[in-house]
Amino acid sequence: MTQVADLLITNAHVYTVDPANPQAEAVAVQGNQIVFVGTAADAQAWRGPQTEVIDAQGCTLLPGLIDSHFHLLWGSLKLDSLQLDAATDLAHMGELLRAYAAANPDRDWLQGFQLRYRTTQQGDRPLDRHFLDALVPDRPVLLFAFDMHTVWANTAALERGGILHGRRLPPGHEIVMDAASGTATGELREPEAYKPIRDLIPEPDEAHQRAMVRQGMALAAQHGITSVHNMDGTAERIALYAALEAAGEMTLRIYVPYDIKPETPLAVIGEAVAWKAQYQGNQVRAGAVKLFMDGVLESTTALMVDDYTGLPGNRGSALYTAEHFNRIAAEADRLGLQIFVHCCGDGAVRRTLDGYAYARQVNETASTPRDSRHRVEHIEVIHPADIPRFAELGVIASMQPLHSPVTGQEGEVWQDRAGEARWPLSFAWETLRQAGAKLVWGSDWPVVSLDPMLGFYAALNRQPWVAGHPDQRQRLEDVIAGYTRDAAYAEFQEQRKGMIRMGMLADLVLFSGNLFTTAPAEITSVRPTLTVCDGRIVFRA
Image (cartoon, rainbow, N blue to C red; front, side, top):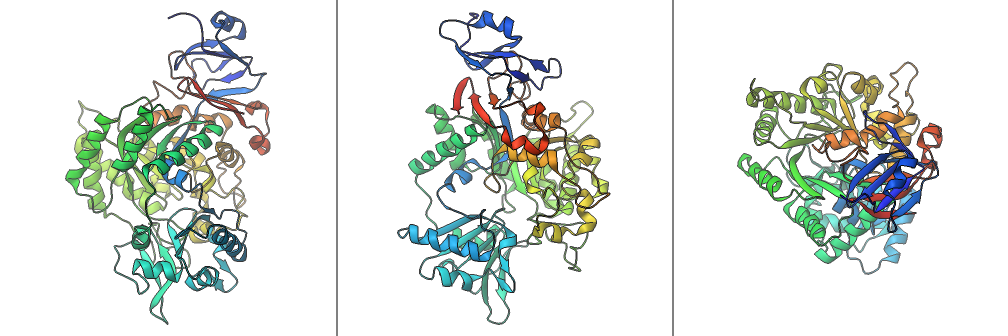
């Protein structure tokens, strides 16, 4: 290999996340690999006439950030829809919807996203179909809660979907009905409730999907993200990503799971094995399956060990019985597939850990120890008895800092649903870490912003919501590891990426300042200025 670099970043505060060599001043890239990590003086030997040299001026250089919970196509397609995260109350939300409808007179369907639960009630006035009818009576409207687990529809949408008078649903899904009129209120909880309406909305054609994915990837690059663990996977979606890779248009790496639903036959899981063999590219990979064990606390569809506060007898519900999930976990594990499971409630976490323990019992022998690296996604609440089981079972805790209130004063519905007795073990990052669990971080975009610096802020500045509760704040080094080295481990890629080390893939992000000398409260003032993925500069401020 000729000792001339294509790219040389020098005079940097290089934090490599490599325990064997944690600090450096310069990094050289040749092709898509890191070929030098060391001092600025020694890096000069890699400089040639065609080398692009970037003087980092003492700013922090990290491995490219890995978002461990992401929805690339889904998020990208929402970029041109109504965004409701800025709505301050129900009236403001109505103003935003009315303005969007007026600005888009040719759209047959009006869809809004990122709606916070706290803005769906104003005094005694709830968000319902009548409220939406007064704003948009002539076109169907669907407004999605930020977590996509609850949707509000107007009468036109309910009528088109044939659910104005309700319909039978599987456990864990609900069309909220008005007892007086016998008709739907417009609130639809969980996907099977709103599926009849959603399925009527035309899918954008492939050209539009590809264009929007390119926008989504550009947004990720702008925020220093070079890899994502996708949380939804269909044959059409992974084929789209593979086509973009073949065309040289992928600007980030994506790990795509195979979706399993309660109705998925056990034999069909073998299709995920075929995906694993087919999709092992440099940027598009498969090898996992994804399931939902429960819903969310806000709509009381998360599965809890004990009753919801103030709701005697209500512990939420699960999408799988314990026996059903055990069978799926054992089969997927036997086939060598990694398993991701959405679990918000402590009951869902327990049922999933029980399934992983069952899979280990069935499939592991003394001569074939397991390195399955199965994962639990979210873990918004955990029961004390289940905390040590992550380390015992080798299960990864995949968590999203922005899902947690930072101070406890944000007025979120979530805290009321959980109840104060559960707060000490809500979003229990440090508690799990101290018990030996490996934590990785993600955003859940488009549920919340994909900006990792907002995630850094939440993880570094989280306060106990009540005096005396455990302090779940994270050290900066642990936050960085969860977005880099440990996230690479969580997709079996720790030998290829996640650290700045010679021979590893050239995925890098340079910041506008020094993260280690910036106060935690000011961490969002430091922004990515250069993102390199696979040796290519994909963002430059």
